[in-house]
Length: 338
Ligand SMILES: Nc1ncnc2c1ncn2[C@@H]1O[C@H](COP(=O)(O)OP(=O)(O)O)[C@@H](O)[C@H]1O
Ligand SMILES: [Mg+2]
Image 1 (cartoon, rainbow, N blue to C red):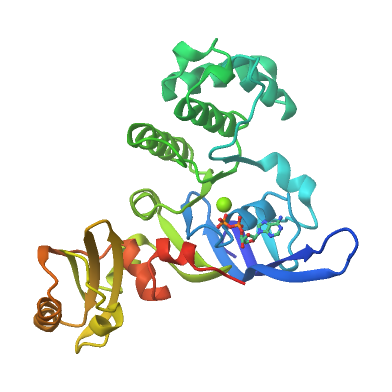
Image 2: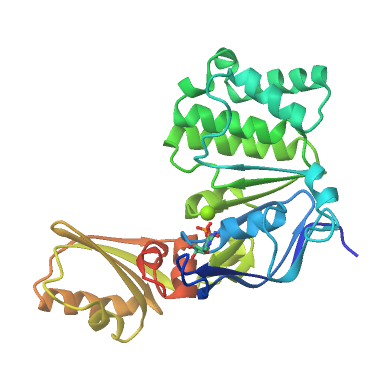
């Protein structure tokens, strides 16, 4: 059998939402994960990509033994997360983006050292790792800064060092670049890649709702929506599914009440998504062939919509998501679910 770092078989999780204290009865059941079967090989940088509420954090919580699955099973480093959590825990570590972890009164170095002691890393070795990672990540000059005085980006770098210093076999990063600016995000991605590349026995699973990040960083990506895995492959292969389609982006004046469906039902139009902001509309089209563009432009100009810009582009993971779900990831987040 192949050596998988992570494996899930038909994993499911239902949250029971209780009513208020008087009515103890369960109001409703929310299916956060449904029949998730994934395999991640040792050494892989694997990404879970999906909108807010897709179930990414729930999956990470199950794999890190913080939450029990309702059905199916999860294995980490060959151990069952529900049956053998004591075997799983010393082999993993987890960091989530945007968390305000650590004791603000302690310095960066003190915080990291304290955490290393929870994991039983010998003290001298802990300091060696801390100082070496702080250097790599560019935080050496902040080693003696109180962690409460760090900016969001620097605190997140400290948190990621916290993930590294226990030398986990499998590291879980939940939205590692959430809320970071472009520069800090780029640093974090570089650090992640370097950590993984430094030892072939390491495996990394991260979640993100940034398409470009998943594309750039991950060896393989599972696209997840409403608790289900819709596709799982390398970013290249996922995008290759759309190579037959032609993708255009149009910037126009407001649509003057012209419904998107009027464009979608035109011959040769596979899908269209719309984003409208003050005085401007952005329409993305997935066409079966380039010639369908003529009909689109005709329909728009007949409705007095002015075309300001037209670009053709290569498929991105965003397009893959639209193809799978029928809506953009951003729109999917705003759909009220019940
Ligand atoms: N403790 C909880 N109780 C009830 N519902 C929850 C709980 N945690 C998450 N959910 C719901 O489960 C779904 C998946 O959430 P989550 O795993 O946090 O998704 P993601 O990390 O992809 O944003 C969402 O609909 C969320 O509202
Ligand atoms: Mg989450």
